[in-house]
Image 1 (cartoon, one colour):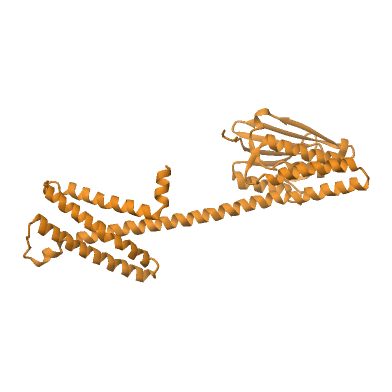
Image 2 (cartoon, one colour):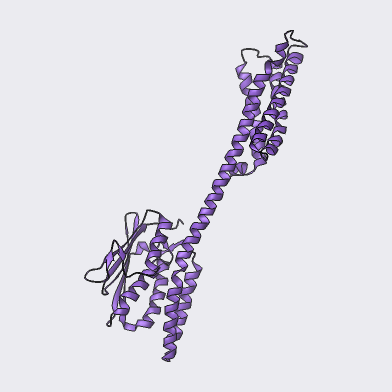
Length: 357
């Protein structure tokens, strides 16, 4: 497969391979087609001479056509027609000479039109050669344009995903720095130092992972534990977290930092508004070819309309849906529901994928 890839990557190599293969095929087909005419070696020699002459005469056409493609369309058409006719005429003369001098041993036809009998056939053959040349060139040009368009689309797609991911960090960082500032003002230096250390580890994970790439869920859980430890410094015993992660799900690939904004949203709108605190349950399980993830809280609940939180005025949950759409197209589900007996539950369904080892 790599040999074919190298062949089509080089225009120079591709031209010579197709050029030689085309004229070899011409000689073979011509000989087979005229097999009943003559089977002597002298006839095969004449065919080989004609094929070699065609091979030689069409080489300059490549450079003429290359120059013509840079001209205006009308001028290009005129150049191609004239060049094809001249080459076909010269080739017809060469074929006549080979036929009369070598095969017929000096024979000369008496009728004047016999001198032009090979011209039409030569024009057809040179026209086919030219058509294949321009066809391949146009195909290569279209393929290059498609590759450039695909590359531009991919770059825009990746930039969009990165923008969505990195929009989340400033909001979390702002809240955490405020909490650290409060701890310092209260002279709780040990708690502030612990929070700074965990924040550093969490941000390192966040920045080291490309939003385009998927990471194992187990790795994502470790980052979430860091994040929740930071939040527990703020909320102390008011924040309770439950984990229910199936073991086979830890190797499943998920978009990096996909659950953190959901948990942040639950803390902001549920835990922080309850004097006695609350609980967040994080679950993950496999179901057929899908990975199902839930984040549920037991907070005061929210007004949910058409699967959307009416209270949501940030970018968190909206960005999650956009990221999933960009990464999985239609092969995902993202829903926001009422939790029972109270609270909000966010569900995510994505394909169950693991790294091939």
